[in-house]
Length: 390
Length: 248
Image 1 (cartoon, each protein chain N blue to C red):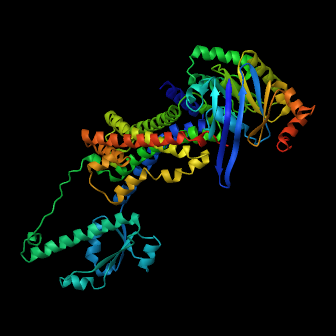
Image 2 (image 1 turned 90 degrees about the vertical axis):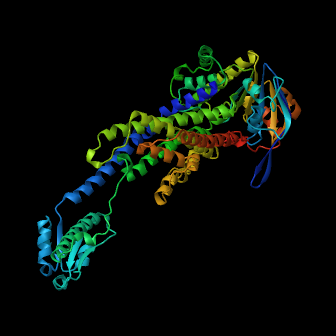
Image 3 (image 1 turned 45 degrees about the horizontal axis):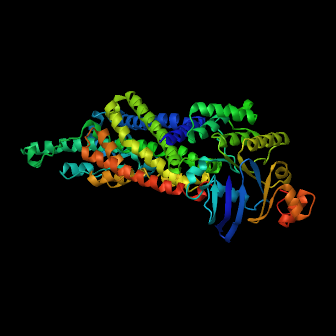
């Protein structure tokens, strides 16, 4: 135990003296991730609002066929302008988000009480045009409903006759649970931070020591290899947790500055911060254990780092799976490391409770995985080749 | 005291098995400096690695102060100071921190460590760089740090792999004085070298190794007599039967 602490403190001391790594792990990533996320959300929300509030400028082709419709649109605040000669080219070149084309037979059909044809020309693969298209659709639907109601009334029929059903929504989502996109990303960012936070030290302390050939004298001391390895893993875990803690604190602080009209309101109370920390902590250990195993198999830092590309995907898997095929929470999920943490983080952020059963299964599953990896790493540490680097 | 008997070690490589150590036997007594002399690739480092428990011999036995290395590896390591071929000092730590770390790993308390560091720093003349980070140290400063680190727990047996490699004349002479001091204090000193002058100047007992086998052993005088050559270098060449590896 004492040796474990000695090794851990030495590794931490050495790491804290590596200024570049310190900046990366403890300053840049905890500060930049919340900033990046806030920036993206704010940008998205303000863009959407801008489109909704902005005066709608609409190019209309064939205005002479439906003067009443055009006049009504104007009365609704739409700024009407003449359509360009080639509608499709104008959309393709992004000169217009959407163009309304009124069919030449419009007035004839209208007078004959037949559906009059109008066409919205747009490109559905352009996301930014979606808001404009929806606004035009809404306006046209309103106009149609008003006209339809008037026609029924003229014929002495109550408008309700044509509305046998009235569908209403009752939304039970809590304000916290509505934040779909942010809820997808925040757990991922926290898990990735915890998973990779200790990777650099884990690689440096094992593969780095092999490369610098300082493992040979170290393993010639009476200290057991398990204690040495655990000390190194301990240091990397402490570092990862520190990084996670800083990320969470910076989220807590930065969400205070978030513009309120973004509609984002996570429950980032101190109690929840503590819960998030307890949930992510095992992932820090899991990540360092995996990178220790990888490092014990690599002769150089470079060789160990080549695993980064693959291993970085690991914490993404649950997020991606849940994004592609969302499933209901089930108990077995809490047994799978990373998936369990993902679900638990989402619960906390949505302001939902986690049962004692789920807590214990979630922690036990990951603890078991860590123990297995530790055992595997200690087997690798006992190999003769480990100390012999050259 | 280090007793080695019938030591064998082979490595598997892609092109087949390589016998690195083949039936090596010798004894390194307390109060004596024993030299393991041989050309590059003779199996010196592999032999030493088996002595300090980092490699398992395929056959043979090693006893250090009467303890069997295979069965009581941890106890053996307590009795050993080890300077490996690669010095491996931690660059981001100062020389003192490097030494203190090993003292702690040997279970020494802070006061003992501080006293030992003073003692070793005086003996190895390392006072003026003791509190500098070892990044940018000269080869001599690195070796001294590694030796002090290895000796922090004042063990009876001292194993050094090519201790004078890459050192200038002054540092080498200082190191020789240091090793002679260890002999006087009754330590068992075993070191490897491929330089005859080095071995001749220091050793009471010389074990000549070539191609994994012990080809001769004895004092410098005995080796000269055995080979019928007056000059130790000629005696060495005659004993190992080739000049290969001597010039490196």
